[in-house]
Amino acid sequence: MTLDFVFQMSPMRVVFGAGRRNRMGEELDALGSQRVLIIADPNNTERAQELAEQLGEHCVGVYDQVAPHVPVETAEAGRAQVLQVEADCCVTVGGGSSTGLGKAIALEIDIPIVAVPTTYAGSEMTPIWGLTEGGLKRTGKDPRVLPRVVLYDPELTTTLPPQVAGPSGMNAIAHCVEALYAENANPVMSLLAQEGIRALAESLPDVVRTPDNVESQGEALYGAWLAGVVLGSVGMALHHKLCHVLGGTFNTPHAETHAIVLPYATAFNIDAAPDAKARLAAALETPKVASALQALGDEVRAPGSLKDLGLNDSDLDTAADLATQTPYFNPRPVTRDGIRRLLQDAYDGVTPEP
Ligand code: NAD
Image (tube, rainbow, N blue to C red; front, side, top):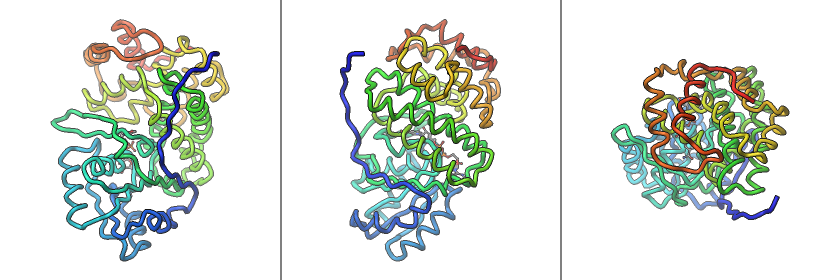
């Protein structure tokens, strides 16, 4: 293979380990932050309160008005809160929705963000922001939204219900799979992506079976971190396009949609990307990569078909039209008929090949 690539990495500090959240003060001191606003979703308010107590007078409030996909009104309200309490730092505690609100704040206000992820979404490692207005989600890339510090504490994911943890982990695997055949793939990111798939595939079944096993949670969160790194570093392709269309048009749940579509997008693409296929096979320890991803999704209790999400036949036509309207990079050429067939297979939940 002839090597020819560009490599760039985001300048972020990552702190990882069980119980690490209890040393948040050290991170904030290093940033010089004296007035911290904690942003948390309603399922993480207890953690946020604990953190607030730990920070004492340096915490100026806990804000829990987080909503999925960052509605513009939520972003405006969050920014107003930052200004009102005169915060000089935001700590986000939660999944992609909480991180997303922190990013929306940092997009307009020059304030450092410390992210404490409690799902496997990976948003904390990317410069990608998203805002929803009138039912339409806009996304963009801006280095100002990158958290300055990301603190991963596997004790925090132990409370994830299995039906959230499983799809969330499959969503992370999807970032890694598409990174392997990205247009701007590079050998370092491919190594990280392969290792991310391995770590997640190995740990997720245990995470779902015994959520309080901190060792498995650590392995899954490590995989999720790698997935976030590759998502923030190289471009995605057909799989992410399809999930974006389905979520944006039919409001299907984010992580579940990824879990369902991934085996079929993989089956569609993988023979056109031999290096990605070899790495994926090594990570999953089988050449039957697409069916192995489907089996893993089943094992971690992700929904199995687009039918399960309440879509119907004509929705598949609409999705196929939308997903083929504008050109984008994909290792295998995208045709309307090919995508319609892929969606039908995902709708029926057939076993994909290979
Ligand atoms: P989320 O943040 O909405 O969390 C999903 C659910 O899990 C919520 O109900 C939340 O309250 C709950 N939850 C979170 N942590 C928990 C815990 N430890 N215990 C119990 N419950 C918990 O969703 P998500 O799947 O984490 O993220 C999806 C969002 O992130 C989407 O909007 C997606 O577009 C965005 N995203 C953005 C990027 C990016 O790079 N910008 C990357 C990935 C995802």
